[in-house]
Image 1 (cartoon, helix red, strand yellow):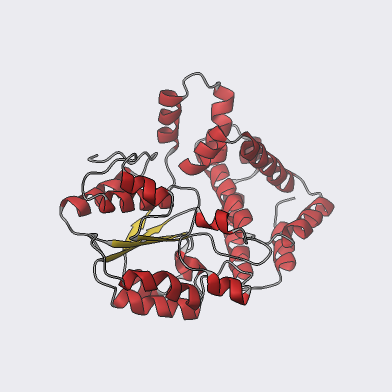
Image 2 (cartoon, helix red, strand yellow):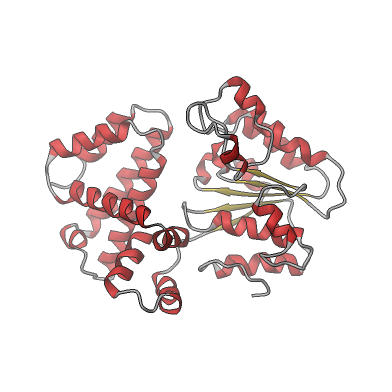
Length: 340
């Protein structure tokens, strides 16, 4: 590698990005697609730093510091959005986003949807003249756009401001307009292989016990950002351990009362995206354990076909929730499909 990316895995993606830089073949729009906590946004931000550093990149230079603090004059970041009763503290928002959100506050927006007003707000500064090589717009979770904002954004992608680069991440590619996808250079981020994670542990945490290492790698589910959080945040580790315990309880027995109570609890959550994402990856981990003939109890109890069916049923339930079907009913039906 020509650059220090400070990321675990994703070598093929990094090689392609470095080739674009080396050949001076920079696209006007990049789309990084993959699971949550896999490292997409971290790489997007590092790519932005490299481009704005003009070839003299380091994580300690002034450009990197400005981008980290969201004060670089030619980098617009779209991450945290002002939301009534949920995300109102401007000092917290400013650490993640740096475009004008006064219209959201005036209208008392209460959702995480990127509105057409937001599109106008974060693209307006891109038309200002500047002495920098690029104006870069970082957009996290592009799938948060609705139809009107997506169509407004598409018009800008079709005729982008001069020397502007959009670097965008997305977890749910199927929610994007095909025309937006076609305007971007798409990079697919896959789950990082277990062997890569094991190598990282061996090199950086040689004294970590085998049992702790195995637990963290299993719960990481191929997502490096999650693994780093486990290593640095004990509360997060305990929270995920409890989640795995809850899911194991749902799958391991036929206690229907417990399942229905859990469905009721989940239906009251504001963001079910987190549950579906974690649950699907939990099931994928079981499938991998099954294929590799590991010793997790659930991978012994459930057959290969049962796990595959559970994954398909969970994806269908997720799709229905995204379409605003009754959340509690969807989750109850999903749990009723679990093996007894």
